[in-house]
Image (cartoon, rainbow, N blue to C red; front, side, top):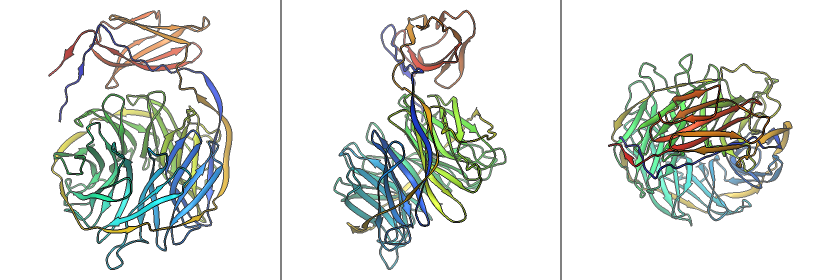
Length: 541
């Protein structure tokens, strides 16, 4: 599973992402949205008009739990909300914007099942941009199926990922299916090991194949380990698959992948739970893999003791990553890094009165440069959708004081090659099932303030000049001067650090490749970006 790193080109090639400090003020906040009992936000989409949240509620609708879909403006004010479902429990776990301007939603239903054997099925809902339902499908086999993720494919179909107890070689297996744009089933497969397997996230590659990440107990006597599977465009498993071992001496069930996204350099970036915290529990991490899924680098982020889990991941306009998740005993959290996992900011969002706890499930970058995290908060009497919109520093203005460890360290996982078995099975399909009804969540403002949102556009205060032997950083403001320049390679290793007499930085000792710079000025302005050295054609075997 090795890939040669290749860089070729003319005398030099420069690609820059220059981060400036041109700031504008935006509303940032923490808000709860309450039903009469339970409201949970599992997934969120952001656009220029606001946020669309998908989850579940028992506060209104037809059954015990119903799918909740809710739209807010950019300040978190509710524009509309609705429930979808039947007499059982219906839950949405993933929502994605579609190419026709609408949304595709995936989760589970116990309302629309084969009554003789079934306990739950995949539940897929297609809506327009205003939340009007266009079609629904409940699809599964003879036992339990739960969907965790959905994507739109290159040819505008929908692929849904989750778990099944009906189809496959083990006690529980990964379940993958494809629907046409009209909701017609194209194919479905159960796949995994002889143990218990979970599929949590997937992407489609540039070659139109799929990469699935989750966990498995089938290849490790010590319990649950992270699991990655490759399939063809038609869902057929392409062996070998792989399991990841973070530390073979630790026996824990808290090791798994939760999310995979495309990186910046023809790579893949993952997060989840590493199971190796200070007391044998978990910490957030980022894992970067090349196109053959060999490890480029891995960083672990220490916030506190307890089970710290990264549940979601997105790119930032500044060329880095934002991790959403939970710290310790149910406290929502965000972590921001640069493109090679160097820690930039870290924040948790506790209820300072300590009457509420909560979890963060899904994070997205907003069009105005903020970060928005959705999840839930709970106390002894109710559970509410929880929405955080944080500024560039991950602040909402009302976090209060909290002692975080706030550091990162590299990790060196090993990969074990595995063979994954797959199978097909018969499917029960319920078409256009679900009653749509209005929902009336009550908004509770925890915190509303004005924060600093960094302008992601190019800042004209920093000019970059590069030749085949050096790179120069020039500040246009005459009152500013550069205090420190640090350059890292693609693996996150520091290769140059200069803190005095900074003019041009010699790059003659650097080989061809991608590098990252950090520039700090006397006024504490902080610029980061990337550049490529490519003096002549070079190819390593």
